[in-house]
Image (cartoon, rainbow, N blue to C red; front, side, top):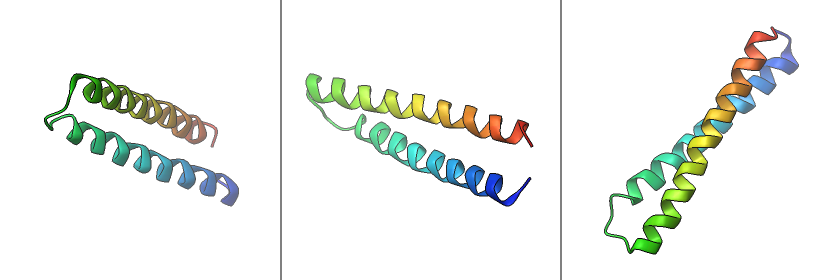
Length: 67
């Protein structure tokens, strides 16, 4: 794996950690006493973060498979 590919992989691995931290934050907030509207909004954001994690994982796997 060349240096540029390693840097790209590292960047996406860091992005995954950011997405996971956001996901976990919103998941924790869903355990709070929320109004129906707040719960709906936070659940939507939480679900978006989960989708982001899946996308980033696919990109990481693609980078790894190309090396």
